[in-house]
Length: 105
Picture: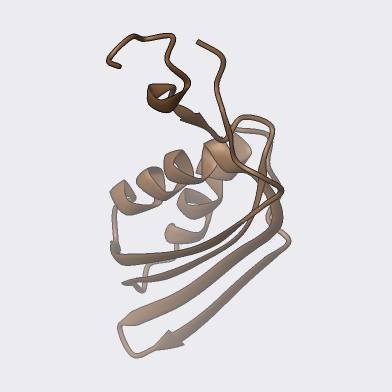
């Protein structure tokens, strides 16, 4: 049963799948923040569908959305956004489109 070729233990893959994603961030109000937030997308050749920012005192609320982002990149971009200087929280809402399948062993 613990054989690596056993289909029941084959790992799942998101390769080739898309995700509708919405990142909601809170951050310190800083003029240099916007380019730092776009960078994780740009380095992966991704263009967000929308980028909304509003200021409330010393804090910013930023919402970045993509209707079809490669699913295997969502956690990478989320991690980069969490590590961005000035970001205090990140909420990632995603919906995988298509079906998730097992990777061939």
